Length: 295
Image 1 (cartoon, helix red, strand yellow):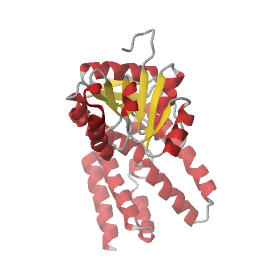
Image 2: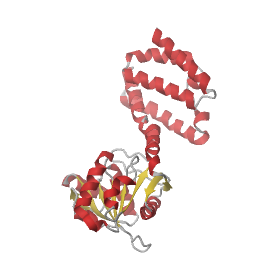
Image 3: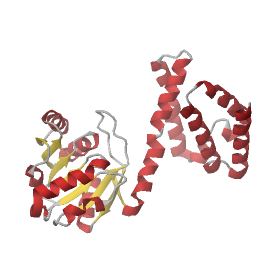
Image 4: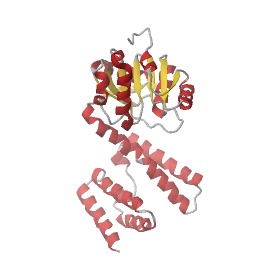
């Protein structure tokens, strides 16, 4: 299997944002797409159209096992149920198959029922955000892989075919690995949205608010790439301007508690990981927080 001259066949279980992206990019590189499984015929057909190939399937069936490699791109909490169902359906037919799930937080042990039936098991997770109908370019993206020897070999081939950079990590480290994605990218979504809403609240159109903040966010990332987080850090706290921080805290009184708590938590985090003297910065931040709460 996976000989250089013959492209393998791939079945995709859970053809949502990530599943569609993997299917489309691998098809473009010559992989054959087998079963494309979702919960309904309509969504599986839509996924096949987005991928450009495959056999639509509403629900799990033996058709999944017609492929050499099976990718489970389902939500984390659905993986155990899907695996149990696949094990029951396939039985000994799993021997020799390669099964990879795409969870960033789960390790290969969740695929144990299939491993006991003879499948090579592992995981593959691109450190990338998949939004809406956008099919992102995975070139240069870190793709975390783990699992058994054979599964790792296949996962590495897939990662490189996608143009990504395969990085082997220990299964026990996956929750921390995934947490970094949530902190670095996932947390940005609510922060951007509440900032847009706050600008809209003082007279900006939503469109203008978005166009105001987006260049700022892009420049922030560009600066980090060029000179690193600490050197690029800007804003009142980076300058020790706690009077401005106090003004922010007073202004936040009119907003929901979660917004104030997020601001306070981020201020404390910045003091701990970015300040030249974290101890002094944290004392000043906590002093300012306490002062405003007493007013």
